Image 1 (tube, one colour):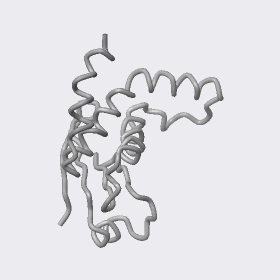
Image 2 (tube, helix red, strand yellow):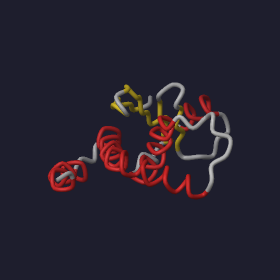
Image 3 (cartoon, rainbow, N blue to C red):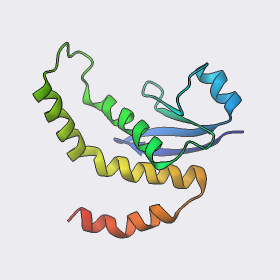
Image 4 (cartoon, helix red, strand yellow):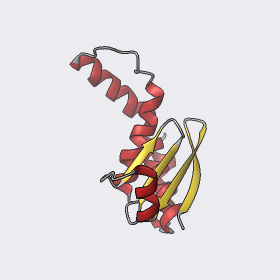
Length: 126
């Protein structure tokens, strides 16, 4: 049976799951990635053992990128891309890190990093 948690991403409810290998294969086919972000369903699925900080940050970046509303953009120049990425990081980077720590804590039970984050968060936001 899968483990699951919910969290708020950009004010919307998202579901995160650790799926067994069979569940993951059934839902995503022969997908060889460790995790999948489905921004249509507001879900992030992890394979067993993949709800680590780096993978969570990667998938959360996909989740937050869906709010950039760039689907109708035909071409983006390199300078535009850099500006979009810089603004994205300014707006969402700390949220992505905190959400990744929450996912890891809720899905794996490892709470030390989240607890440390909560202690230093106030200093980062000053």
